[in-house]
Structures are given as C-alpha cells and as structure tokens.
Image 1 (spheres, rainbow, N blue to C red):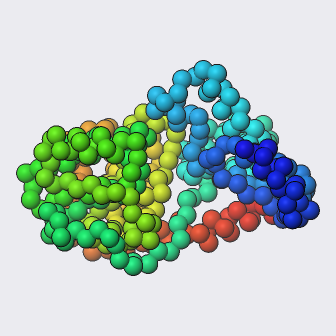
Image 2 (tube, rainbow, N blue to C red):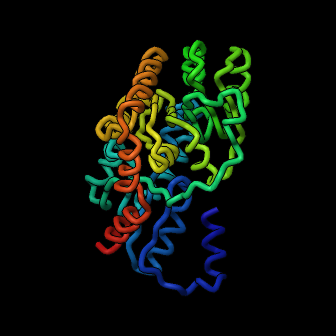
Image 3 (cartoon, rainbow, N blue to C red):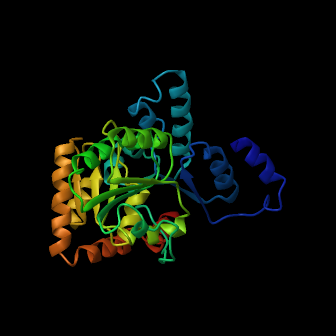
Length: 316
C-alpha cells in the first residue's frame, strides 16, 4: 500500500509540491515510507501521532502470538518511529514504551491528547422515551464492541441492577462481540438493557442528552495506555463516566483528579456496581459535575490545542 501511494504521488500534480511539515497518524502502521519520501523531498520535519501501539495490544489480547507475523509488524512499526522527528502519544503511560527511542536521540517525545470537534445537539434516531427504559437513569455505552473492550462485565453489571426499576443500560454500536452480547443479554433475561445499531456521529450528542452517565470499558489484559474516543465524546456532552479499564491506565487518574466520574481496574462487578451507585448519588447533589466534564474537554481535548502543539513541534 505505501509503495503504491508513493508511485501514484509521483505521477500526480502534487509530485513537485514542497511541504512545510509532514503529519501522519498510527494506526495504520504502514505509512512510514510515504512520510519518509515526503519529508526528504521537502527537507522538513515530521510528526507521528500514535493512538494504538500495535502489534503490542494485539498480543495482550491474545489475538496474535510472538511469531513471525508479530516480528514483521513490529519491524514495520519501528520503521515509522525512526522516520518521525516527533512522536505524540495519547497518555503519559505510553511514554515509557518509547523511552529507548527517545534515549537514543532519534527525536522528541511528548503527550498529545486526543481531540474532538464541536458537535451541536441535532436530534437522534434513538428516542429512549418510547422504550421500556423510559424515565430511568441511563448508563450509555456508545462505540465499538469488540475483543479490546472486554464488555462482558457490563452485562454482569446490568444483571446486578435487575432489581432496580430506576436504572437502565443502553449499548449503541457494532463490533465483533455485538451479536454475542445481544444473545447473552437475552439469555440472562435482562429487562434493563437495550441494544441499538451504530448511529451517525452527528446523532451521538442527541443520544447522550438522554442519558445520565457514559460507560468506558477496556479489557483488563491491556498493558498499554488508552484514552478512548468515547471518553472525549462523553466529556464534550457533559456526561460523567463510569469506567472499568486495565490496571495502571492513565484514564483512572484523569477521572479521579478531575472528579468527572468513577473508575476501577480490578475487573470486579461488585466494585463497578458500588461505583455506579456512588456516581448516581453524586449527580443528584453535585450540580457542577456536568460543567466540569465540559471544562475538561475544552481544556485538553479541543482541536485547537492539538493543532498548536503539533505546529510548535514542526517548527523546532
């Protein structure tokens, strides 16, 4: 793929264009050769935005062993790191993974927070007032439902609340585990859970406006740090978070320090149940909690903040 891109670029009207900087995003891990060609032709600096550390996370999840395929992907990823003058990772915990790269003087390393553009509330095809969860306090999960999320614990959480008629759980999205989770909920006979297919991004604010808290889930086998995009979406909408993530994840400290929700790392339904109850109680008495979520989003996760940071790095 990257070599086909380079060939087509050289045959395009942009072949002689010279650039002030090269910015690329990983994943995919395969754009290093393209970035290198552009960088050398323009004699400019480059900035790599790393959001997933692949193939490490795939090994953590048991999707891949440390065989030939792993080492091939590892070599491809290492090449793109060598091309970069600056690498921006998404959380402080990821800095350790690149410590050797930095110590060898290959380039600069910094935390570059994720970002999300403003999204006004413009309606949603999902109307919870017309469902069995009408008038309940809703915990919502909006995003991918796959192996990396480890969402079985969320159905166990819903099961633990089956006696509460004032609480409901809504899952919106798609993924490799989606159909299995739906079947699991039916087998358990959960009446406090609803599943919906993926909706357009512009409808997400309208969905979240009907809910009380957002859910973040990451499989406890993860060893790298990850601040999921759904966390930004929740903060943008002023929705506090209930999170169950891998041990040591930087997201836990962020949630607790900023007081924008509850988080645990022990993969325990009992712990998560208690935190969910605590969060709902705090929402009743803490009228500034939603405002803190929005303030956190504006301070750390705006496109302007990311843009200014990347441009400053390219000028060095």
